[in-house]
Length: 94
Picture (tube, helix red, strand yellow):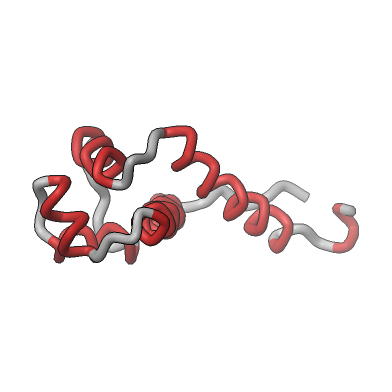
């Protein structure tokens, strides 16, 4: 049985969760992250909740603020995808 294709909102939720984890690792508040990235803290909150997408330049600004790169972001997203894939499997898929 094929896994369902994740929706755009699912992708935004995973990205938001990963960015939140990186922000916490950097020990920054949303306000501090926004100031360092040149965006409003409310926008940081919306992105982390999956309520807003973001431009490539904004993603890079946040990663710089978190002293992280694309590899760290991917490392945060990967376990989430594995959990989603495992939860969508039926017993006959094993």
